[in-house]
Length: 237
Image (cartoon, rainbow, N blue to C red):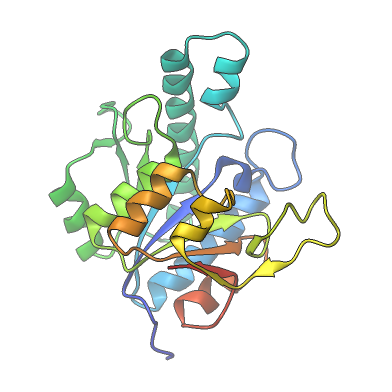
């Protein structure tokens, strides 16, 4: 068996990553494929934590732009992440991967409340921990939640799953001449306003020396290749 380059990872999954080819909601085939990739990491002995977004159901910023109170809109977005987290838990447990959904907002009937030591214990027991409801506070994105949880659980790296295969100097879906960046410093991401993660998340990672690897979750096998130490995507360090 190949030896993994990381012993504990934090996978940041956007809600959009679950949509597949759909325009809204959760694609059954896509969530099954992501679950299978996570299972492969567990077979390698890697501790896996996931922070999941909710943009496939509701995005707080969009709600606020439509005239909603920003705090209320953000709380609605947090609830959307809980739906996605439960869907991912179901998909993982159907393929015999033990999981725990841990919520920053208490809802004990469906998820455990966030307690750092309990989350660490679950990881030590080989369970996949799915963090939902962001940080539990409005005005913070799930990117910031991913940075915060990665630091709290002692992750080696944040793996940011996107629809593109790394960071580009401009949007590759709009500009044909966009150039891929294979390695970049945190401060360059901030100075150039590259939308890797929001500025709060990038700043937290910079202050705590937490590397971020941006990759395309749709490329089957890339997640495993990253964990095995192959050069995939873009690294921010």
